[in-house]
Length: 364
Image 1 (cartoon, one colour):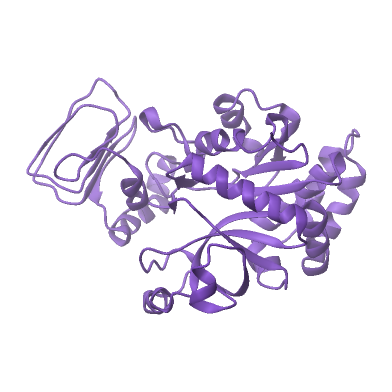
Image 2 (image 1 turned 180 degrees about the vertical axis):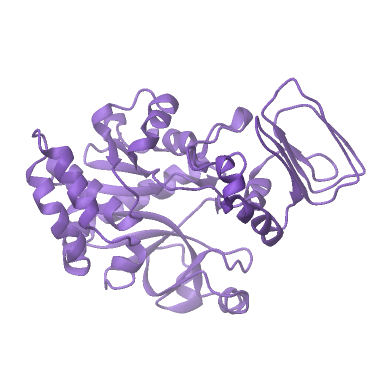
């Protein structure tokens, strides 16, 4: 039986364009639907349905992305779609969601879940999050879900835990010792070798009252900006007060603003495989059913010869993609852009950065 005090907040306001040319400024990566797999936002929403009452699922996104939410999750009540006027990273997002939920339920226990993640096992996700919600309901802690690294990856955040290797391997909640955001490769290798670190998934669980208290202590410049807005919830002035709160807030992540300062940070070990969908490489790793040469074709017809390790995709389902002689390449065909590029992230980003030039502005 689900607990009426438990809430899920899906953070879907990111400007993710790291899957260009599929993702653009006007349609970020969390709302990109790839064949039968749906979007990462839709998958996040489906996972939340098994955790909390449907009416306790909220989405925070930018005002200009609201139609994607309504289209992809049409049964979410509009009052549960919290619209940010501008992007200010995750700290204002957390404050906005926390004050909104506490206004409805002062006993709320809240899970904050990024929309752009790959999680391989919904049942294991539900088991992990249910355990973390129960733990947070009975402790004044700020929980983050941690995943044991399976490789040194400089693109992820790392959490060292009190008690070292033994504590990390205990499969129980453990207190945080240090946070390190995106270390260089050699340091990531040392972290993995020590067996004292988790990857930080960016999934957080806490009592609404506890995170409110911690935010007001650690990021008062942001919480004070929301004080007038909180008093205006449900009044005609609510929208203008929210716009002022965001105008007055600095751009800051909840990791830097609160989690790295608090003495209440704990890790709840995950029982699922996890990846941030932050690059084409992670998309490749998340696609099931690669062919015998490791090629991933996303739903459409593809004829692959002497090629391996490629991702091929076309928005036109009536188009055959015929590829020969490529290794570790992206072949991405959209209405207005055809991308053919090595899958290597540095080479890909070097090419995509050219869209910043005026001649290519319309393709961003």
